[in-house]
Image (cartoon, rainbow, N blue to C red; front, top):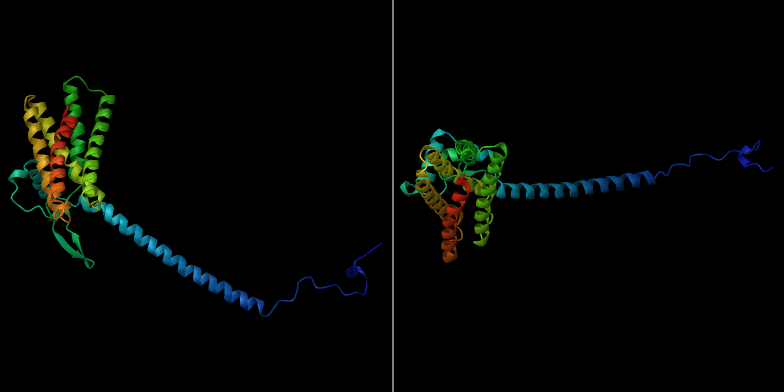
Length: 263
């Protein structure tokens, strides 16, 4: 029978573990450390640049949501006056800037009447749903399904307003305005709609007068706001297109108000 030499008596058994190479570990350790440090630095540079890119785009298109809720009672009152009676406003329409971190930044709404906010649009939208539901009850049309449909209609109208404003900005080459600014400007329409519905609850015949007034006021407010604030950098070389777009924006407030105010 054949037996291996390691099992024969008197024959030394070969070592199980080979002798370590005194140079191999040194080269391996230095190489692995070099690779780890190089990949780490490269990965950190990629992640750092990606993080800066994401933050810059978020700040450009979405801004800080907390900025839009820095309001007080005085701002809300004055802002509603500007929205509902823009023809009586004698102040300027440009936003106020301040240096922050080495660059210019817009002051929050509490310090600037021309700054957009989301407090009034959200409160106006909630008030719109409540008043419209109450009016539906007076007309004998109230039901949970009808109120849910009304809520969906309101959101659809808000989205349509934002879409119109955004398309206009892209048409005029100024599409980098923060999205929340556009959402705020589009939501101000519910302030006038609430006045229209409240007038209809008190006296039904006031609906037509209030509808015409609030539509005209909202159109004038958006025209002046967009002309002085959002279109400042492009109004010099596309004046004709600028004026046509502003006219379309003002006229579009009439069907939007009818769509949202007809219960």
